Length: 426
Ligand SMILES: Cc1ncc(COP(=O)(O)O)c(C=O)c1O
Image (cartoon, rainbow, N blue to C red; front, side, top):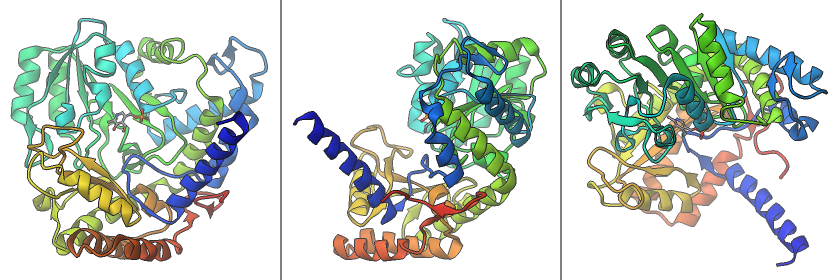
């Protein structure tokens, strides 16, 4: 393909992708959309600029305006997350984790974390950041009923292993971690506590999940684009007053993990923080209401929804089971739903052992649906579409066309200063 044709084809696919989501029901739990003002900051001249260092202490000239942006962003982040220290430079949740691991551990140290099979993130595993830092990983015993670390067994594990760093947080995250007890045990053995809030950061800042920095976490990391509805990027947060720790955290992002840290995204993050300060509590509480309503509605339609006895969820996620362990039924369900215009991802559930082909579950998220104005009534409609696709096995093209009609009423980004098109430019 010649370069001109390649360019046209790429740009056509860019538009097609936006169009696809515009007509679909997007339910990937880690995704969100940008407000018009955040989009404006991201699509700016800052895209091509550099500003290594911190506001007022740069390695390059020309950073005065960006200093203003980053200073306001840091101050807003400290208010939104109610903490003494915020670094808003990280380019992703994974980069935040790499940086926190660099600041809080040294190669050869022992770390405890949730295993990927139980919902931990790949950056908590040997194949990811934990391995890159050369740490010795010990994973928590898991309570499959409660979908959280088995408290008594994890307390023993921490006391027996005396790790240098104790890490909590998951990618599959239905319920708050019983953090207070576990971090007390960690501190007793001289360990630092790190909480990865990538998925639930918006819920934490909105006051509807848990408050890790008050429950014993020394450092909290997270993504800026999941339940926190900003551009792709990350945060490093701490309520410690220890200036040495602050310096280590700042240095672990630059020069530790980033050189350029994508200034346009930092500007977008700063705007998203200001919008969150105004609208975040409502957004977070609507997300959790919707997730609970979705769990109940799917259950009424006949689906096997995980954690029924705990009310299905306290977060933005719902998990469904579609067959026996390692049956691949989650993969097939996700494919059928996509044919019907509903975007989800397969997920391992307790009992599954094969991450790529075997998962029997789906992980469903409602941050984007909430952001475009869907409420608990619409969660019933969404569950009905699931039943038509997966239980009644209706012709996918018919369901897809009705999904598109349903979605046409939800095309505006909400919870922001200037509401506007959710899927612009198409
Ligand atoms: C718990 C957890 N930590 C870290 C990450 C990585 O975040 P990012 O995709 O921003 O690198 C994820 C991603 O989903 C996650 O679930």
